Image (tube, rainbow, N blue to C red; front, side, top):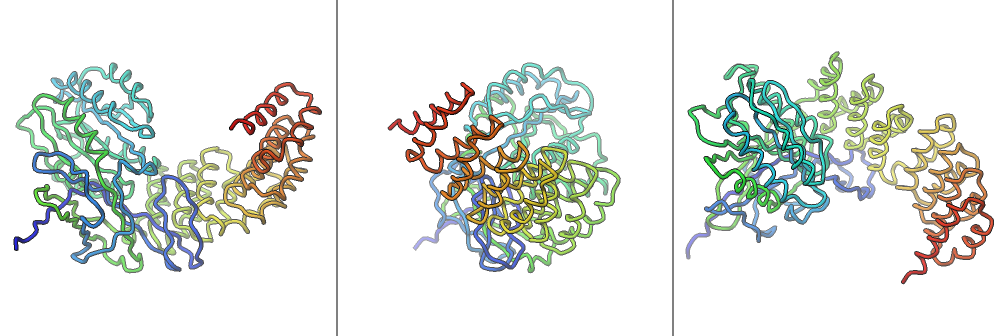
Length: 530
């Protein structure tokens, strides 16, 4: 019998995503774009891998199944908890950041880069997004994240001419910060000769800086690809080593960049997502080696070398929260959100009051990832933050607690009567994650809360979809605020369906605002449409 050949897949990402920290079991909320688990009554970490398998001609291998893969960590096989082709995972959208080197050393490549980037953008799926930036001795964003492939095509016409030095690694670092709050998986596509003349090559500082970049890549689910248009005598080291550590690929081309970029777009959509769970209490080493094998002959043998456990960086993160630089503090709270360690939790509980809004926003997200019940109170307080993006982050974090958050949310409603943003946030959350316990406090807000709170309460009762909420909604059809009346009518129809026709027709007869009358008629018409 001929022995079966085993090839090693090209892993392009390893990331840690923590599950709930509490011992109390519960069902996790079905939130999009989140790798979030709860296993029995123990906290677990999920290790996610985006895997590319290519044949000897460099073409993606698309027909693999779960049983074709074997994953080992530190030489020991692990059991897969999740598997799917990335192209089929609508809950894992792709964010691509294209970084174009416009230094003097790339002067002859600008026109070809422009054409090639346009070819790549045409291959993205609906729901995927792209950002385009150029760099020399500074990073300049040409196109913020967009899902419209036509937008970057216009901005690439204004790339400019090559000049200046090459701020390669710092540009990647800044892009990682921009990517870390994007959902799903990420790719940084660097078109460069790989020469960084900002950080002294081979220095201790460069080594430490690259270690930090690698850690950020693993945490943010980011892989870095390097594209070298043309050949020169310049060495890619240490850029070459950095790209390989992230699980990316180095690609050389002397001519047709457009074809290469189009092939990369195809590769991104043909990758596989594999995930397994580990107990963070056993994460006593700073680094774990990984290997993925595919039971298929003639595949490329290349694998990411491993990932760094978050636990070893807790003390550093706690110390960085005392730094005067807001960006250092923001990086720290992001990292601490991956560490199942009491020190990390305590540090994050303090960070929600940081003077910088970016730190508060990331602290909220980190508390949501950790899922510890101690975070409920501070997150509820953040619902009243003066910055809308911080309030949104706190709301999303609280939603991750699902039904575990309901008692705290219910208790918080009367206490929030003097803060309309917090009150509205609480009732909105009760609509998202609540049950019958939410009806009375939400109905009370609908009857006597401020205008913004009443609108949110009317919407929340509709989202709950429970018939005991109809009485409060019917009374609110006479509310003095038009937005409250409109929201109440929508929620009544949402709960009762066709059975609400008589109530809505009576409301239309009494409504004095022609716009609201028309909107209510449209509600009934949609219900009548087969």
